[in-house]
Length: 55
Picture 1 (cartoon, rainbow, N blue to C red):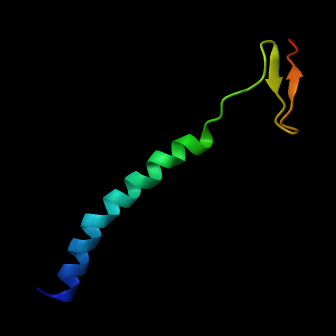
Picture 2 (picture 1 turned 90 degrees about the horizontal axis):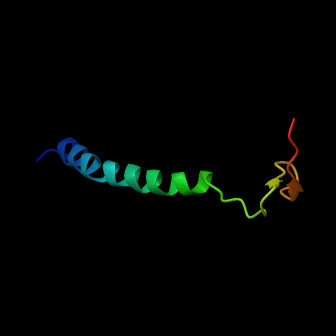
């Protein structure tokens, strides 16, 4: 087999696995669960829980 064919076969085998591995962890990094009590929200600037105001 030619070296370019071997390299292409190797990339076609490994790249989908690498893409799946990145995709699985990416979703969890962007999600966060609020630890604030009811009636409070997390302030985006400070990260602290503040009382929710309605407008």
